[in-house]
Length: 125
Image (cartoon, rainbow, N blue to C red; front, side, top):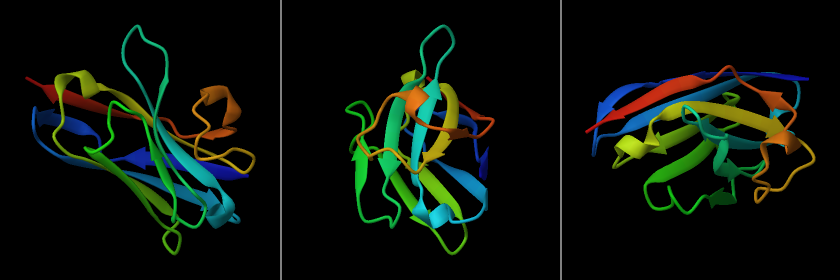
C-alpha cells in the first residue's frame, strides 16, 4: 500500500518554471513505477511522464518532452516533475500515480492503482 501527496502547484506566467513534488508513504516505494498525469477542465486525464523504479529510465508525452523532467529520490520517497517553458495549455490539475505492474510506457490512467489528490497548475498568458 502506498499513499501519495502532491505539492508545488501554483500560478505561473507563460515561459516560467515550476517544480511539483510527489511524496510517498508506505513500504517499498522504490519498487514502484511512478507517473504524472494531468487533467484540464472538461478533458480526460492524460499521461505526462513516468519514471522507472530505480530512476534510470524515463518516458514523456510528446506535448511535454524537452520542457518537463521527471526525477526521483528514493531515499526521500519523493518523485519530482520539473516544468520549464510553461504554456497556458499546461494548465491542469496534476496527479502522481504509482503501480508495481506497469511499464514506464503505460499511459492509461486506469492501469495505475495508487493516486494522489492532485495539485493545480495554472499557466497565465
